Image 1 (cartoon, helix red, strand yellow):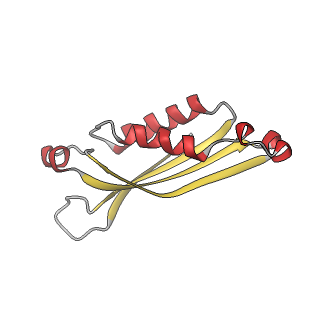
Image 2 (cartoon, helix red, strand yellow):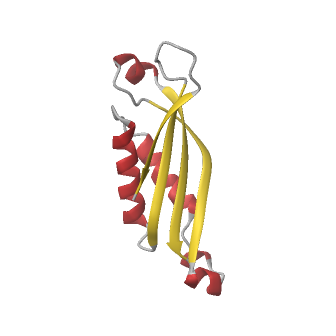
Length: 117
């Protein structure tokens, strides 16, 4: 049986970007994660130790968000790699990282990078 955990609206303040100002001033980011996993065991056992912990998934994502990068693709790859390392039962993962109010010279809500593995 496949279980799907979605973690929506994770907010972080981080220093990702190619421009020097972005790395000095920082910006708000919103992260979404979708994790598919084999949930046969926790569905039967009703035991949290058998489940894919969304608390741990959040902590993995937060740790990667705090490491500075020029590109959101770099952050996304690190997140995906770390999630697969942390959860052997993971069968598919998607992360979307949105940079709020990017410095592009106009009124823009956000730009986003979505990666899946």
